[in-house]
Length: 301
Image: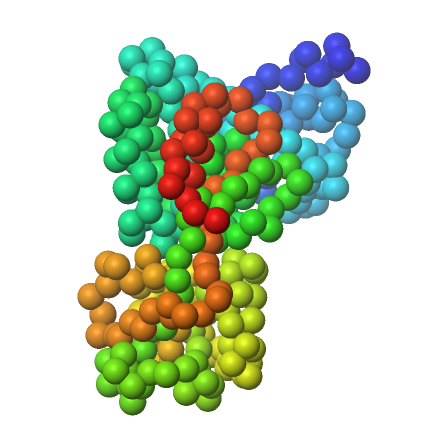
């Protein structure tokens, strides 16, 4: 078995993933700049090496087999690790001492992350930082494939393959249209808004944050009527501005808006939102220790 696996080449993974993405030999061959017959031969060769059919072939249709579906995840990890390793090598060759790929949710970029990156650049000028915005789920997928070193997300509900650590806590804020009858001057309790339509982050994108909002409303005796959902702050603010509902967001997300809305910080609520750093337990990036130490600096329990 080991001798067979030694026959695997990086191109086999590239060819397989391209075909798995297109599910069409012609389109895959065109993308890879090779002939269709050459692609077919390489896929067949890969199947011989693995001793498993990776695709189900019909007259004009190609689909992944069960073995192919499993292999796709492993192939993505292999390619992701190779890409990351080569980028690190190039970084060192260019005179840097390390590179960290950081994923983040939108609210983290308003204040927390820029401040921390500035501190890191001052302390470690030879470390290169690559930033990529994404939802909790998107970041976890990239972390699994070793295409991110660390993710900043509003959830600590992560797979067993991940480590996590709280790096920031902040208050929640109500978001209301400018012309709403409830405003900063006459707001007393969330109960005043129990009959409103709510615009929230989707449950499937950030379960812990979503359930925190549900628990907050429940503590005031009502279940929110959720009429719209979005993972993007600007979209939420535009919907609120248009009078389609109200929302509750992390305070940091309110710092860069120009929409016609009012924000009411829920300072006296016991419910706070946390930002978590998440990373793969099998990471080989030693520079990660540097950013983890700085990200948690000054955090109070």
